[in-house]
Image (cartoon, rainbow, N blue to C red; front, top):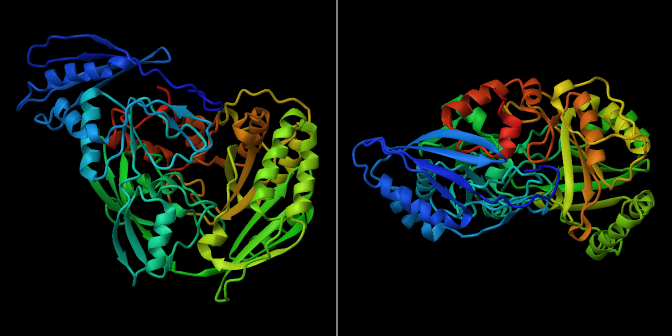
Length: 552
């Protein structure tokens, strides 16, 4: 699957070779997408003869011309494939086409399940083991990459969304991990609680944001996954593991941000705080002034972010602090209305697809129209943290040590205006993009968003051990139409890598497993836990193989 382009569904064809251990006879069946149900019945009849012995199934998949051979051992011999299929049939949606929110990646899973209980999740995993299928859990599908894609079993966690417990004294909440953030906010509000920090949207599932180290902004606030106190994980054997910072700590440290590679997370306990309001002030500034005074600006409020309008020296400085003031909203204006900031902007971007030289002019115009005057508001924390992400887009985001922010942004500015990349060192094998870089100026969309995150101790968090600055770039797809972005991405990634950057896990990027091992001090320990919990690679997909599995 091409991780940089819209992708066509995979046809799901494969070969199944069941082996009966009692007779050592072997039957080979070639199965197309339309014949898979018949194949499942054939396998079920083989598995059904097992009573007290262990049945082993060898599966060979043909994917892009490559063969993958694995041995799957059925843990509960009395639970046959046919019985499991019958029990799970009501949870399955046939011929489901999965597409991420940005409509940039899609796939056709062989089975699409929507379980309602942990027991059903375990049954899906057992069936996958019998049939030799890969399994991928999904939430909202908001990741702008193929992280959620699979041609095996896809497990939608939307109905694993129940409240388990709340401790108002300790300000903690335990929920099923498929719960959407907006529902979590509603539940917390009932108990006068809130998350300490949030990203820009609340459409994702709890497990989704934690498993990808989603973050907000604030010099004293870590990524959201640092708020996880304990979790429940169902592994490739169907085992349920409860772990925390004090119980099975190594598994916990690996699982909190694990990209779905260790199993399916079904519960999480989160550290929250008392509900609060934020006073938000945003004001225009000049890029050089901001970069020359960056450390002071980072610490000028509890939460600070920057929006830079490329092709200009215009920047918006966004600040927010906790307050007890009454709610106060800015006066309504056409400048901030949805019809202008969304619909007019999308229409103008569509025109720029045909006349890209207008993009710098559009950037200057939209800054003047929407951000050239200070804006102030007071509101509940969720409403201040969250933003409208507008419409379909390509996005890329990396973290770098925030001490390198100014020089990285200057290098990015030079690249956009000249097409020339000048980083501070060569990262060698870590970035593998093949897009050609020409010494020709680019036309890119605004904003480039800059956020700041306190270091944490989550093994695969991009902010592991480093106070970090996240720099995010974007190219919108007006009305779902493609726009050129690969040259922008290639230069951006080279620049970020040259400043010790680490890519955001939810985004499509080109860093190799070897490069990620260089960047993440705990990557080898994570890989060892993954091998321990999923030695056959049930929870791997193309994305995870591309970035986590070092070729032998």
